[in-house]
Length: 265
Ligand code: SAH
Image (cartoon, rainbow, N blue to C red; front, side, top):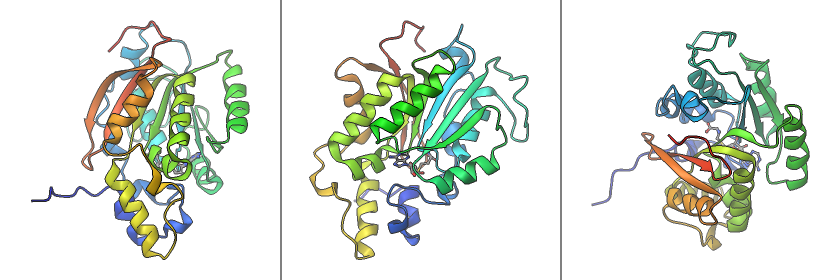
């Protein structure tokens, strides 16, 4: 008997226009894939545990932030701020976090900026993270403002599939390798393989071609496992823990750079 299907955002969005969202840049993404389902899996004291003596401010990078709903929810959750609390002046966890969020879609970034409750601590930028020159220029110059060369923590939530479909196996490996070189900790929520099939199916229904790379992807199957292999096989990172699966069957994986000597969870 077939296992019951748990619908993910990319599957539920089948009524929308995928041609207009070839990067997963759906304008109403968080309605289908609510931030709460993910942040509640993360221990509220995570930042204290990862950075007991931490640098200050902590620097975070959210890659593929869409219109920022998850970025704000992560920020609130990790700093222990209540839903309607607008001031990060006295963060419960005693940490200051500067979060840089980027997305390829300028309209989504414009909306994120307009709606941001924390303009002083969360910044947004339009950036194609697969444009090596642009990302290096932009991220290095952001980090250099703090005299740093790496982010303390990176977030890559429901983005790997879009990078993989649009840039192939080599693109996915290059992307993850880059993140591992720039982030001391990395939280990743990879889309499972069934989402790839659903994304390709949606495109076919509209009479469009498959994503360029879909049929030739040799990296496939258990995507949480594959992403873990890529990040750990050359010893760049190690898997710290898996925070369990969301109701739509996605794991939240936390990796730590082996450049670090900080205490493990
Ligand atoms: N992280 C958010 C949104 C995920 S949707 C969440 O989990 O709720 C995937 C996002 O990745 C989209 O907004 C899309 O525009 C962005 N994205 C895809 N490819 C990208 C690229 N090359 N550079 C930057 N952002 C990208």
